[in-house]
Length: 58
Image (cartoon, rainbow, N blue to C red; front, side, top):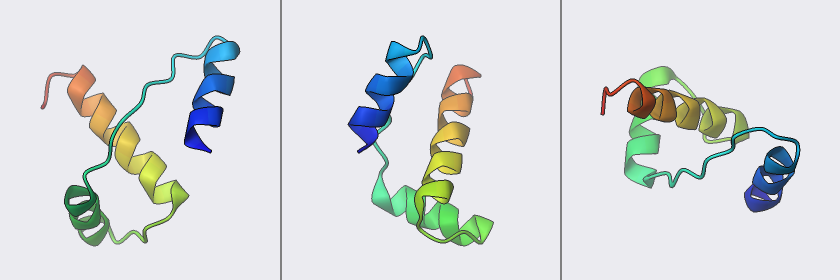
C-alpha cells in the first residue's frame, strides 16, 4: 500500500521519499508523544524524522 501511494505521489510530481521505521524507535516516540501505533502516527513520525535529517539534526 505504501509503495503504491509513493508511486502515485511521484506520478503527480510530488517528491516522495521512502523511510524505513525502526520499530523500537517508533514505539518510544509513540510513548513520548502519547500516540497509538496507527497510520496517522506513522506519518507524523516519518515527517518529523525526515525534517530532522533535512535540517541536519540527525
